[in-house]
Each structure stands twice: as structure tokens, then as C-alpha cells.
Length: 407
Image (cartoon, rainbow, N blue to C red):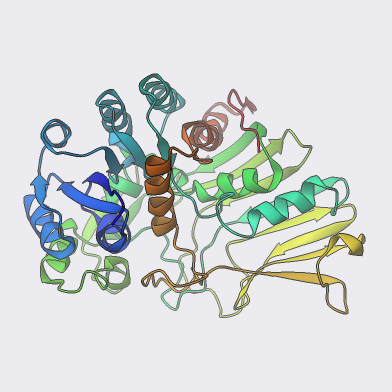
């Protein structure tokens, strides 16, 4: 067997147990040496399920004592600056769950620490980034002029057509999604800016309006996840998100940040468009478009399409730029895996699971010393599109971006 990357993970929450740990447990290039969480029971259960040899309740003790070369930081946004800088100073490579941070200053500090230490850093999400098909192909079509001159785009994120409705908010995890330290709903949606930059290149300016429409909410108690994990026996079937949507929401929670944003992004390439953050509270009819981007140019359009097996559909008056368009001039681009079902099985040929793909890429980059496209510079730019929206909404002024990416 080739050398394995020795990994320590901090945060034994839902994304860890449902997504990252099962993959790291099985991936031939990964060695999940240690797991860490403030909750000792969660640590023990993650060791039992996923085979980590060491367990810690103190992150800094894990950095000091565990024989690891990389850290998967899977904790709430408020811890990212402290944990990332400590990892970089300890010479550990970093996979950082989104969002990178909840302030530009914190993102800048992480970026600087990574560069000073010379470690590798991957900032999630890899989904809706240049790492996921079909974005490189679509980006090329846009850059090469298949859509003509820029007109506008819109991205309204409502989520898939769940039978249980759009959830209204994350039904669990106030510290990750709802309280002030988490930044609120806006910072859970790094996917939007990532997709926009993947399509149109770097962002130039941001204007936004926000509101807190539903401050009082009911959520599932924290203890429910701990109990769920303690009862889990199959490491590939420990996805709490499948269970939490049906769990009683018995804890009162006050939303401490805006829960809806309308954001206008101006891109250096000339494109302008809108990104909406928020979720509906009631079911979306089956078959209705949701959570999709629409792009309109003077010579063509792109629709991100929820049809089975299709991720994007392209029309252009320049038919020679399309591959095998149908009789009406449309070209369909298939998607890798169906991410709309809430299921995250073992990796399958052609499937895309961003937690798995990011972990695979990170291990490969460490073992082969290859660059990471969605690195600290990419992450800082995506993050500034979120912090800039927050600042614009608070001040009523246009925010001019300070960071950039070459893509």
C-alpha cells in the first residue's frame, strides 16, 4: 500500500459522521488517526464507528500529541480562525469546512497564516466549484462567447422539492447556522458565490439588502444527534440529516442574524446578477424548478436544470460552439451523481459527493505536492462575497471587493 495521509479531525458533528469520516475510513490514501470534539460521547462513538485510534476533547492537545500531518476542521464558523491558524503554525495541512470565516479580517488572518506556514489548504465547498463537472465546460463557453455579451443572471436558492417542505431553516444546529457567531443563514450559502465565480470569474462589487423575518423558531435539541450517533451501527448509514427532518422540534431558538438576503453581484467580466438567500417554509411542488441558476446573454442562455441526469442546458445562436445540440438547438450537460435526494452513498463511478471529492483531492495534493484550486485564495474571495453582502446590507452602500481570483 502507498503511503497514507495521517489525519486528525476536529468536530464530530453531522457533516463529519455522515460524510467525511465514512470516506476517510475507506479511502486507501487516508489514515484517520484522531478525532476531537468537546462532547466526549461523540468522540467515543466516532472512534467506534470509523476506526480512529485516538480521541480528544481538546483540539490543541490533539495538535500537540497526535501523529498527524493534516487537520480536517469540521466545526462551527466561529472557531475557524483560531483552529486554522493553530494548525498552520503547527505545520499541518488544512481542509476547512465552509464558510471560511464570518469576517473578512478572520479570512485574511487564515490566508496569511497558511501562506506563512507553507501548508496546503482546501476551503469547502468543492461542490459548485471548478472541481465539479460541468463548470469548466460552462466557464469555457461563457469566456469564448457562446452566450454573446453579458446580459444578466439569477440564482434563487430555495432547495430541492422536498416532501417536507423547504424546512424554513436548518432544523438543527443553532451554533452552525442560526446564532450570531455562525453568521446566520448567509454563511451557509457559500455554494452561491462559488457557483457564480465558477461561471463568470472574479467578483468586482456587491450590493445587498437583508431582513430578519422570522426571529423565533423551533429546532431539534442538540442531544438528539448525540443519541442518534450512540445508536448507529453502520458507518455508511449514520446520516443524521435523514433523521432530523422527522425529529420533533422542541427547543425554542432565536435567530440572531438576518434570515433573508437579496444580493447583487457585479463581476469583472461584465456580468451582473442576483443571488437570493433564504428558504421557503412550505413544500415545493414536484417538478418545479428550485435552487437553480439562469444565465442570459445576447446570443444564448444557460439553465441549471433539475431534470434527472441533467445539470445544465445550453442554447446559443452559435450552434457550432455546442456539442451535439438537439433539434431545437439545446445542448444538455449531464451531472455527476444526484445530489438532490439527500442520500450520500459510497462513491460510485461517475458520482460526485463534495465531501468525498474534497478529501480525495486533499490527500492527493499532500502525497504528490500538487496545487489545490479551491485554496486559501479562492476561499478568501468567495468568503468576501458573503462578508461584502453583509456589510452592504448593513451600510446601504456598494461594497468594492478587495480580493480576486484568476479563473
